[in-house]
Length: 256
Image 1 (cartoon, rainbow, N blue to C red):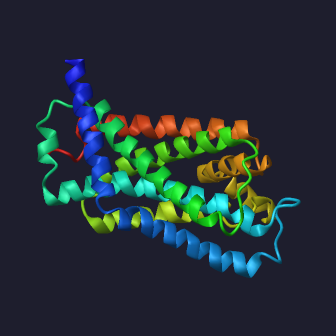
Image 2: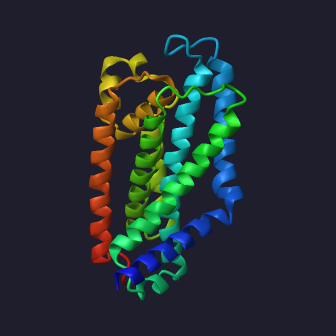
């Protein structure tokens, strides 16, 4: 029985990966282009005026932030868009009649989200190499925060997809929660350059720790301890995953 469930989870994962890869021009190439446009605009304007870390140009500082921002946003978009589309088109019923457990659903949706997030992030990194060759001071942190951050956002996207009943609800979730928390996480600046009150606010944002921990892997320096960042991101992942699993187990808004 467990072998059959594992095979089912693998099949669902394959279906989710195939779903975004069949339209990779939209799901992978378009986000890469968006990140490059951010780099061209902010890098051109601020390269000669801002230096966050000694010996690190602004363009070099900006690239890891854009890579991680792309990973997070696309990991969230993958699981959330898949669920809401399935609910609205009505094909979710074909999954509901399978004997898949909530663990299998979670592993497939979040696993596909991680793969899409990493694919987009790698694409951004490869395209931006021409602007500033990356330095991999502590590559272990890069991998840990990329995978953990993508997993966290995939699980959050799962919650959003379960909660939303129409596309404008999903858009509101993304525009009023995900986007502000991403842009206020230190992607384009160091939080140490902010006034005291806004520094405190930034440190309450878990996205800040994902961005800062990921960027430390490139330069070996950051605005917070990498172990503190790891603890906060890991705790957030466990908490969000527990909520997502609970909603899946109870069939929240999945069954009429």
